[in-house]
Image (spheres, one colour):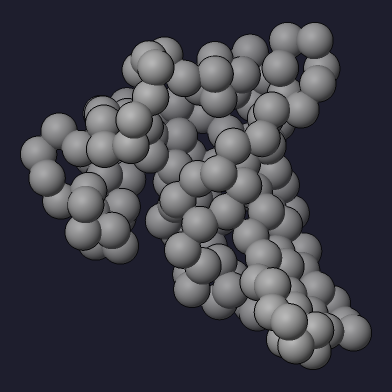
Length: 139
């Protein structure tokens, strides 16, 4: 059992298909939601706001939470019945709502990673998570 080096953490993030985004609600309680993401560079992740998955509203709680308090964590992990194959990576940082050219770049990165996002209008917005710390562990 050992910690993952930062470059190993980034490699795991690039391979992971999904994770869990944790934001803070107005009352300080955590709000967790499963998300897909794309690695933008060695410092940030793009998380889509899309029209592909069913939602009650386009005004997502995670976006409202980030606008009020940008502190977030993203957790990705791999479980296996062979516990020697277990690992996790946690990325902590500040999130922001993307606009303009930054949003276009995020949509391109997401579309390159996920075929479903290549449809026009599939991604209507995105959050960037600018990472301050990345940690990980493996068995």
